[in-house]
Amino acid sequence: MGAAFLGVDTSATGRRWVGPDAETDRQAERLAQLARLPDPVARVLARRGVAPEEAEAFLAPLLRDLLPDPLSLRDMGLAAERFVQALERRERIAVFADYDVDGGASAALLLCWLGEMGHSATLYIPDRIDEGYGPNVPAMEHLARDHDLIVCVDCGTLSHEPIAAARGADVIVLDHHLGAETLPPALAVVNPNRQDETGDLAHLCAAGVVFLMLVEAGRQLRDTGKRGPDLMAYLDLVALATVADVAPLIGVNRALVRQGLTVMARRARPGLVALSDVARMDSAPSPYHLGFLLGPRVNAGGRIGRADLGARLLSTHDPAEAASLAEKLDQLNTERREIETAVRAAALDQAAARGLDGPLVWAAGAGWHPGVVGIVAARLKEATDRPAVVIGLEGGEGKGSGRSVAGVDLGAAIQRLAAEGLITRGGGHKMAAGLTVAETDIEPAMARLGELLAKQGAGAAGPADLRLDGLLMPGAATVDLIAQIETAGPFGAGAPAPRFALPDVKIAHTRKVGESHLKLTIADGLGARLDAIAFGAFDGPLGPLLEGHGGARFHLAGRLEINTWGGRRQPQLRLEDAARP
Image 1 (tube, helix red, strand yellow):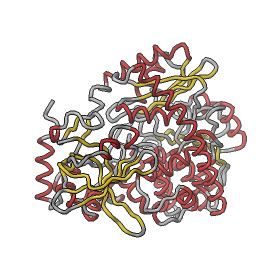
Image 2: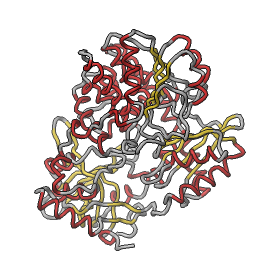
Image 3: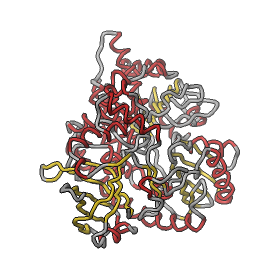
Image 4: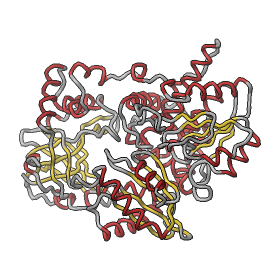
């Protein structure tokens, strides 16, 4: 273990600061010199492994250069051909979608595309509590009686029996969850995470797969002299799904989200306009807005309300309907937060009593709402930097959800548990997964899951490590610099926003905001000042320490952002940690 960055072995929040290694420093210096980039931007690119000759293209990614050939995915040609055939024959089409943001956005992509082509489809989203995840036999039998084609989006890869039950209808699966050794008896299963795929597109969410299918469908239409909808206008939905589903922002995902944010800023989709307004978004959309303001509200319907509300909102063209749906989802999201708060407190206490230093953090409780266990698992993961599983118990059975950390494939481990018979069913993808388990089997199942995750390195890194990209003085943190750094984004899963340390600065002013936040102004002693905000600072030691600074100097660490208020754009540090020099 090398020396701590700035000598900070234990910060105010108990973390050790870790800076870039020597090779990253050298690469950043080369990028700064050869590509003529500011040092902070060069450091972001160096961490991402971008060479100097690749820097220009990386900072201005073009979707046409990064979009893969849809036909590189197995069954894609067949799926698109059958979809176009159903359109041209005016067949009865049903869209069976998962109840989360990715499923809702995937369904909306198909519904909007068909709508623009003058055709409609039946939307079916299962109830989380009564039907569970994915296709089920009664629903598929019912849909097959009245439809010629059923398109399963963000689900279906493991649904052998339900798809077999859809007699009389063709079934297409457009999914991204991990596949088993055998595929269900569908006409086509398009999934970059099939076991016989290369894995080159494994980072796509379901909406990304659906988008590629629509690209191929458009090509097939053009071959017959017809024209499909403008798919660039659909990228707001793909961006929302990609960020909300925590898909890594690498490769084509980065270009999809970047372009999708531009499309969303035009405020052309009534559902997203209404949702943005009810969420009180007052600036251009960013991955933060998608992941923390819009995504949870779309999800709220599937978690504790009607499962189809999110997809209906995203696909409607009626501003009045959009406003009504957005308001309902906002109310449900408030209820969801209240339920989550209670479950989170109980789960954290239980997990802490069990121990937070292993490869897996988990908790299970009777009556925990199945709609919030995934969110609570995410909170446990964030608090401990370890994979986390939270399980709600009812009638001797547990239904749980898990969230993982970078580099640890939780979906594959849970699928292994199902194969070994320790859980009733389970699956997902690298960063998120679900499971069903008998209450009596929870302890051995979680013990085995911990073993599988430990083999992948879970828990090996200290949860107290705070990784930093370099040093920055307050005077250098300008709006222009932050805008240049943002060209290396968007930032999110698989592409964390850069963190910088501001060394040996003074606290010029502090002000408590609300119950737990701290606003402050920092100074470098040379006349430069920078505003900062520390969210939740008074939920831990950071707030009291900085509020009672007594004139002491500090090393501060956080992420740079542009704060837009009253039409003015100012640089701001989102403060995450502090340490005395």
